Image 1 (cartoon, rainbow, N blue to C red):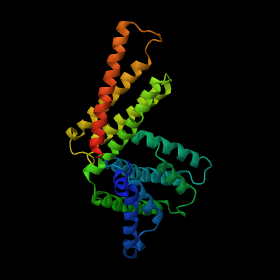
Image 2: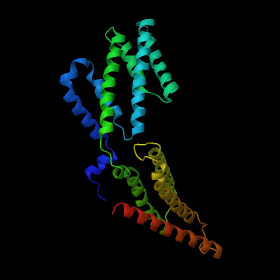
Image 3: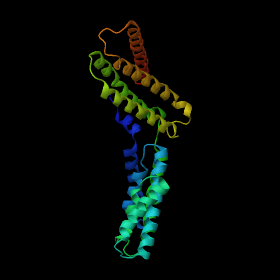
Image 4: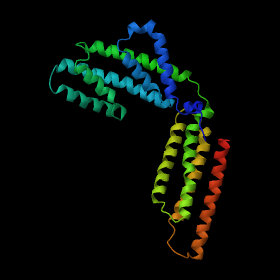
Length: 281
């Protein structure tokens, strides 16, 4: 199925958000340009806020603010306490890693970047002024980014395709696996990849449920859970058929079990196929 550009932008609107934000910057620059010392940090902040979901936008923005403040304070303190000491930059980098894991649970590059820039002369001898200007410019970029995010049109039907498209791609790979099984081919790697992709679908649904920018309430995401459950049963039936005992003539009991799982596979495959076709009709 060919996906239109409009749908592509609905699936991942980050490019549009950045372009709109940059246009706003160009419009506002003649009026507020004299207050912006480092335009680069404005654009960096805009890029940071251009995330796919509301939750990711908040998280990345808070990380940027914290990183700028933590890195700036680290650099300023070391600048005055240990000026021009050979160990100051490695120490700043170590502290930057520590602050990131201690407060955000992960390495936050901007902490180290700001601290090292102050200690290597970017502040031009005025680290406090540099930190103040950088933080101000960052906040301007974040403000513009948030404004664009909340004004950006989002249609629930289009946004739901973030999940639906992944399901369609996953489903398209199931029938070739079944045909390969019928030919006596090995499904070891195929099944391994299928289970991994299925876990990816579960993670994607969880992110959607936990992010109010996709669905206003959890009940709206339950059809996703049903679809994932059916896909999981399909893969389970394929795995059972693949791992059957290598017998030329299986016993009557085993043959009955294999027929059951094959019929179960065909029933579930047809059900999911109808659901997907109905969505993309």
